[in-house]
Image 1 (cartoon, helix red, strand yellow):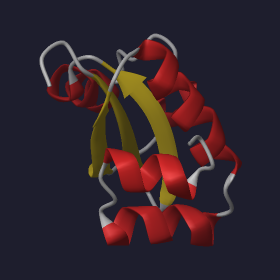
Image 2 (cartoon, rainbow, N blue to C red):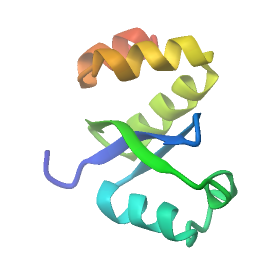
Image 3 (cartoon, rainbow, N blue to C red):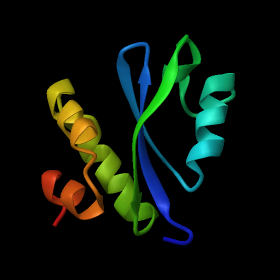
Length: 97
């Protein structure tokens, strides 16, 4: 998808951080360098790994999915990550369709 917005999940020393961006590689680099403007959560992490990413239609859809994913308990997040859900599956899982 051209000009897609991405929902991504990072494993930060065993804790999950969820975010949205138009450039996952750039954002991951910012997190790892500690230059992430809006993510104090990741600044102190010693080990940051991208564990999930999915392209979404637009910023609104990405932010809605992010908010719903953040509300899931750890087990629910792990299900999404390990299943590697695509856009449609994720939106169904999060109740957005």
